[in-house]
Amino acid sequence: MREILGRRRKLLFRRGGKPAQLGAALHYATEWQWPVLPGVGLRSGGRQPAGARLGLGERVTRRCSCPDPDCVVPGAHPFDPGLLAATTDARMVRWWWTNRPDAPVVLATGGGAPCAVSLPAVAGARALAALDHFGVRLGPVVATPTRWSLLVSPYGLPELGELLHSQDWVPSSLRFHGEGGYAVLPPSQIGSGRVRWERPPAVTPAAPWLPKVATIVDALVTASTGSPDGGSRLAY
Image (cartoon, rainbow, N blue to C red; front, side, top):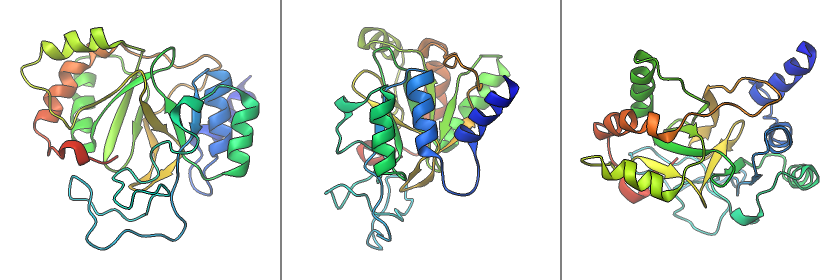
């Protein structure tokens, strides 16, 4: 058993070399039953014009493969196939990443799958420190150079609406990835850089434990309030 878990850890958390997207995608889909699909990815060798910038003032260094020349989430979104194609079927997952081995791994959030809440990286670090200080148990946390995403148990719009209605103000830099949304998972490479685990999930046969969004939303709103707000163009 220890040897098997060790192999799984190498698939999910291998550092250096070429990312093992296929192995990770198969693990998410077949062992954790998380529906995934390949993200649009990046154009090889492509770069954005010198003046192109992210919402937070970060320069975009890689061009997205989608038709939008001004895409602010390069590589980090579904395109072809679309989000509705997300699946837990091993044969489909293997076919996708065999043909596109460098494609980012995109999780279709909501339904029976995890949801996520994302915020700017600086705010994410503050929020995690505050939650740790108060002994709040966290699930996996995904990090890119610009944003962190906390995975949470599935929630519906009525529940989320009540939580946000109780807040005095919710910064637009705080994003909620629920039913019909998506999140990019490690070990993907997107326009802003490498996608990694800030808080890795336990490598077990069972899907990772996830907190309820209600237990973390106050800390995330507070941390995001003092962070730069890029509005609708805030990139991953």
